[in-house]
Image 1 (cartoon, rainbow, N blue to C red):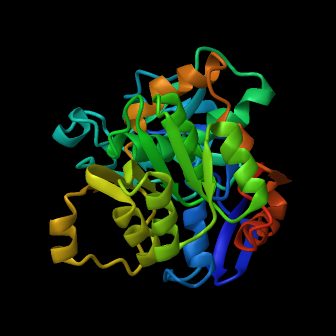
Image 2 (image 1 turned 180 degrees about the vertical axis):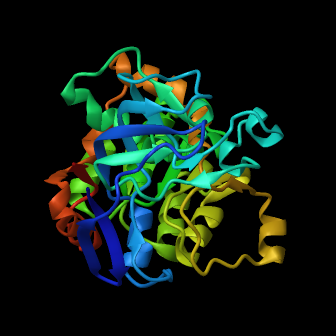
Length: 338
């Protein structure tokens, strides 16, 4: 089959790879209906994260089960399923408290930009939809595999509650779906930090009440001005740079919380500043599996439409253009159809 391989900075190719097969009794093999390029894929694409030789890519996926191992009980061939970017057994102590991305048996899904995918620990990783969805619903269902689940976790980690003022640092797909998550959780005021007009428009469509285009200290000053010197009750950090993390912390009121889901690159925190800020920090790789049933239900019943973040759709053999478009900020998120 043809699959996506990253050779080095800016060098994405579609090449032949062996078809996945059942290797363990707990595996499932699924035929991918849709996959996509993730913002985190851009770190190695830009050369900011090392890879060891040609690397298969992709960790967001949904599709039809083709085959299951002899020990699989919760999904079966013919079902449409969605899974997390980390496979998990969903039975270990960490899974039991809702942190499946820290599962003691976790395995990173890294070959999903392809027509077929092997999913380990299928019973603990995959969730089936009520039926095979209409094609128009597939993009929104795909988002819950990672980007919607990650935006949702950012809001959960930041302890977003009804009536709060929430700021979102980052206007990529995760940040935009963080806006949608905060809106769904009842935030009264949602400040989206964005310089890009198209992304600002989508942020407003998802529930943003205010747009702040400034960054760094100027961005913090604007948040303080908007909140009358108090700061936001909750801030979602969806980038992963030193500037974005400090902007998030300094925009948060004492006693408020930062939910950080941007994969950190070069982030260092000053213990004394954090100590006197009285700001809570929580985040990490989103435990998407915890949220899959709820998010699938919201999409299935038309309560949310996170698939709007896909503003570029390409066949898999044009995946390199998807990476380029996102790298150059010509696209928010690229959907791939095998």
